[in-house]
Amino acid sequence: MKLEIRWDDQHLLLTEPELEEEVRSGRIPADAEARAAGSADYLPLSRFRALRLAIEAPDARFSASLRRKTLPIIPVVLGLLLLAGACFDPRPLSVGWVPTLLDGRSWTVFSYPFAHVSRVHLLANLPIVLYSAWRVQRALGSMSSLLVASSGLLFSSAAVLLLGSERVAGASGLAWAYIAAQVVIGLRWGTAIPSGQRGFYGMGNLVLALPLFLAGFGAERVSQLAHVGGAFGGGLACLLLAPESRVGMASYGKRRTFNMVYALIFIGANGVLPGLASAWRLHGGAQELPGTGLRIMLPGDMVESQDLPGLWARAPRESPKEAVFVEMSWGAGPRRSAQEEWHWRTGAQVIELGAAQSRSGDWIRRHFRLEGIGEEWELVEQHLQRGEQRIRAGFLLRHDATDTRWQYMEEILGSLEVGDPPELQAARSQWEKDPDQRQPALIYVRELRRIGRDSLANQLLASMQ
Image (cartoon, rainbow, N blue to C red; front, side, top):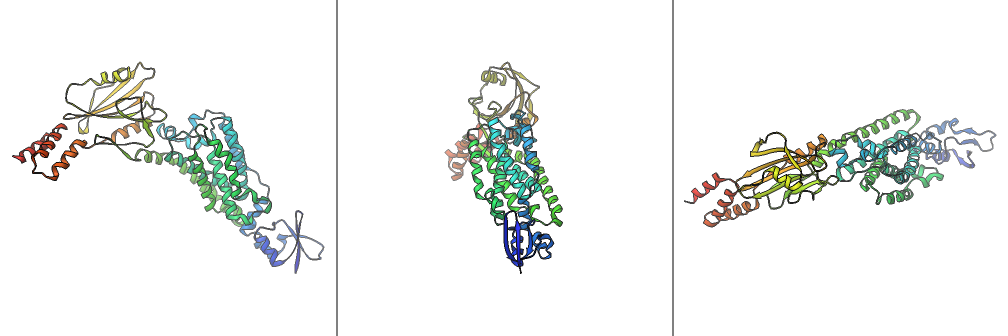
């Protein structure tokens, strides 16, 4: 039996099996009407018993969601947050190694998408975020759209905190998350998208990325890492999630709740991320100071400081004077005092805070304040005397530095490993090749004495008698 079907301005004549397949695949909407050929009255498709399961099929539900007019809940909320964020100074709201980890402002992983460095930056992001979020919400549902945003935010934050060194602000990570989701929607469910809307999903949406991509170049505190992380997170979430728009009415509420819970889990993971990133950064790798035998654990994005000439010094890019320093020198003769040394280096009045302290391994620790050079600074210095070898290590911080900065510097300083200097290693290697040769043994004894290992040197000399 043939059926006449109508919706909008469309009219078709199909058999019942053909109609069921078209409804199940979403090509004919659930609100269409049908009647037997030649019959007088059209009836809603839901009145046909054979079509009820087809109307609840995933593609049919998905197609109906795209055809339905829905309140743009997620775009409105994001838009209001973006406009509110424009009222604040973006610098303290930015995310990155220095503001989030070094200064201990962990909450910036939530604030940075809504802070923008200029009106141009905001105007580049705002329309794309609103448009893409609306398209994704129409296709997947509001909680699935929230899950896409939270996943994009998590991976964007992770990329910046684990791999970047710059301070980042802006909603472009969210924008890229939604653009990637639009692409994935087209690739996963393209055949169920109504023909008039297929251009809004799939690979064609990469044209949206072009102005966002170009706006990122040369803009302050805009990171391509945040873009890539956001796109990866949004695309991955859309690839793996089961959207509420594709389940039947009986399962809709449960699926919506599940996606909301998953979104909250991603948001919670974003809050935990700074602690994990901090450990990753601090223990990211050891650096060996050339020609010294010294090794120190140092975050990879600490750069060479030019403010402490003559010392091996590394500091955050944004504050090059707040540096960790290490120095190894030779000679057992008289030296300038620490106060004289730092007055000579900085021109500051150097005041010692408390008495020198003995630390494990014969280290002597001293704490100073530097005044009279504009800002007040605090200096921690440890030195170790081993025979003729003298090792100095410490750090310089502003007097009002955060506790987190102090903790970082203390952990970096505490990671210093004192190994044998290259001269001693070479002498030992040469002696071990032929222990019976007198000349290599004497050179080895000399190098042992230079670093204060007299007991081992005397044992070696006694074995040569």
